[in-house]
Image (cartoon, rainbow, N blue to C red):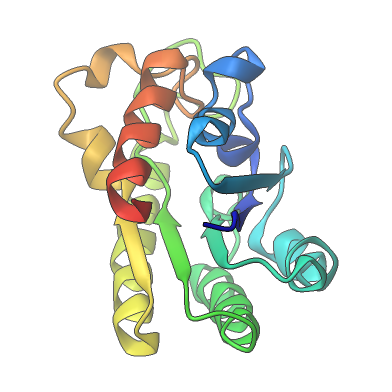
Length: 189
């Protein structure tokens, strides 16, 4: 059986910010036999950044599977959610020209903490509500364009380990990364 190539496009949540490389969910995918994993997660990326590099980082690599997860930095930088959704729509449509295997990752929830560099305690509710709206908009988009999605927002919100999976309220620790990995594994296998 020939190896399938999956390109992971995203931000720091895809890159594996804050954990040892071997603890990141993206790296763990390398252990799947017959899967070639290319991680194109870039810290700080918004969906606009992702769209701008989509041809170079995804299309030119001609993958069998495309995984896209973005929007958290759009929310954190107070960007218009409809703009983020449209960017993801454009990436999906372009991706569909080379493969039908597109998976959208719905970004994880956030955790309210006093010591987050990324979310102030005061703006947490705003960020949480907008990530919740992003989740609904992404589900609608995926249903409209008939592509798969993985709901990490709900998965992390309902996790029995919710209090223990974040480094800083936004980024996932090793336990959180493993939660993402396990969920992806059940989807792509």
